[in-house]
Length: 490
Image 1 (cartoon, rainbow, N blue to C red):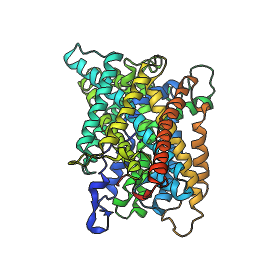
Image 2 (cartoon, one colour):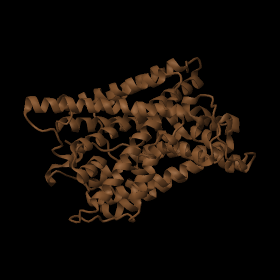
Image 3 (tube, rainbow, N blue to C red):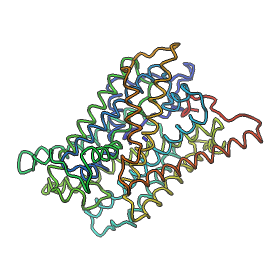
Image 4 (cartoon, helix red, strand yellow):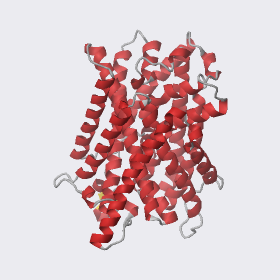
């Protein structure tokens, strides 16, 4: 989903059985800040900064600010909900508490699964292209074309499946190292930007609006914002850590908003660097579109430094963990839904020794492999925009429903939240997220995102119907969630 770049503890491994099944509260403010920043900063900024600049020209930093504002509104609603219902199940829990409609809860949970798969698929392309380019720069003769990129991307997804089958239970403290690598890579980009502004960079470009076609400023920024939104998602995953955070009522609001603000500043600086360093005509035509425009920033802005050879590998390391955690999250949700009999029970099968959910891992990996192949074989599709945009589309739908759920749950006064968002926030949050879901917020060529999202959700609905028929005809039981509070830790 989330587009995060962090490692989350496996809930099943972190439970303190001696404390009634509760999670150990071992995450303080500093670790939580690293978690949130690392969760947000990942594949997004590497993948779509050039696409954003291609829509609006020199004011590429504006869509990132607008995307930050939209994300911040929904984050405030999440904060109200998570301090009112501090269980580690995220959007599905909030929607279930608000509406108690099991099928709607399932759709929200499966949409989150699909967003993780599309995000990981986006990351796979970045990993493949940067790895091939990096190796070609070191040893030469390495193929970097579409076929080689497709094969490496597919191989990378298979590698992720093998890692997840082995089991992932690292401490959240490892996230400090991973986030530091990502920030280091972006720090290189920002340093190049400051150097360019101090020497011969065209600083005046940062206020120049340029858009292909005849789009006006509002339409162009709207479209660019939907692209930029992929870079802002990830904060919603942090609510799954609420049971492990020290004093979450006080810590969560302050740290989540701080983390969002830090990421927004980094994204704005990166966007400014791109438009200052890269000549206007080259922003939409990078040397390797799959590798992203940031690699061109290093080539153009620091041609005499060896960082040019190292940066592709920094990108690989930063983005690979994003994909790993997205697939880990997706498989755990599928496993949990299979365990609760809202998806076929066979999807809850685990390896005898390692207890990793092998059936769910194979299912989510198969979906990712099919998605990557389908999108890449469509010559008329922008692979990054198609996959990253589908991630944003799915999560914007989820955010719309979560904001509405926040309004509904305000009527329940039995439990009061520690943090309460301003009264108007869920209304505006739902309206802005829903607005960005519409076709007016995308170029016509990018409407394939609706088809991809629709097919992925139809797969889930088909499995739900199959499960419903099996439960009704064979087991003589209703289909619904039994323990929504711990959906990922069954």
